[in-house]
Image (cartoon, rainbow, N blue to C red; front, side, top):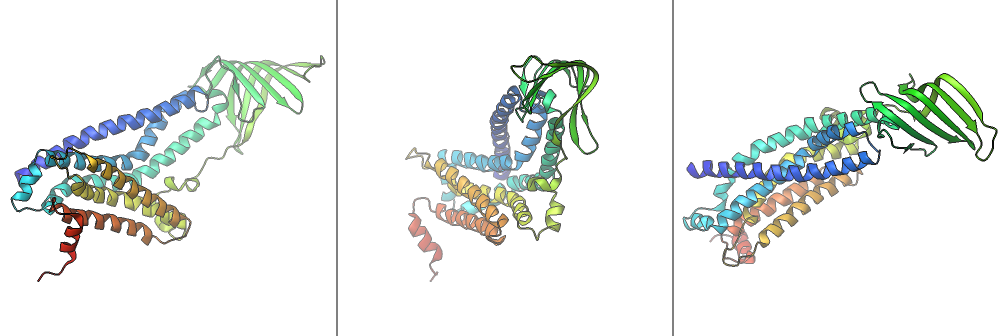
Length: 368
């Protein structure tokens, strides 16, 4: 029908605009956070763009769910404001007749959310961990900017480099000061790079330099020259496996390990995402009611409150399932309550001028 095609086109254009705005806000916020951490030397400068990309992929399902909810809400609020819904109801049609046109728009996006949540999201989270691990293995030098003094995580070493080549992971004109066991060791080297031992320990290899060792306040310093000097950079760094973070565990592994409460909680959360997209789109239809005579937009506040209650309810039940306090049925109960609320509001908005209590009595009263 013509109105279905027109609605789908309007929802699509609105969703595109909403998605771009939300994506710009969220990505810019995360970019500012990562750039601040890079300026402080916590992460390498070249890691910022990759980490933003991985983070965006992981956040995509929630972003798409919010986009669908806001799009349906905005489009139908406009229809109420322009009296289109009044004409619709006056023609003897019900709000329930809008459900299928909305589902035509929502179901493909719900399938997209399911695909990203079940498959792409865990992959992106694992790749983010792997990339962060690679950066961590050379963060003692590569995470700092040339010409800036950098203190190690253990606060026992201070580094300074004049130039750094990210391509070869090598630095030139290196200054390092090691303060351990009451002695100060100061090293100047022309070149240096980070090497990984077979056991995973990171070591800093310095070439062509001098080493000064002594106690602070004393004049008996020892001076030595070296062609090659190796300094430990800390404990062994073993790459984190998928099991270190349940968000990065593949869905197949979650299904195979369903006996683990945390695995059940994560699996239930992933399966909840596409259902959330559908139920929120359905809820947005009655919540979009707008009375042009009053001029108030309280419906937007109620819609925002409903979204946060729904998402927080799912998060809370997921945590309870992970702690083995309740079963997976608790997550399904939250969805059932949201679906029931959407259907009750749909029935009520078929009579927009009737009080809510009267609509409920008509709904549950027996027909004579």
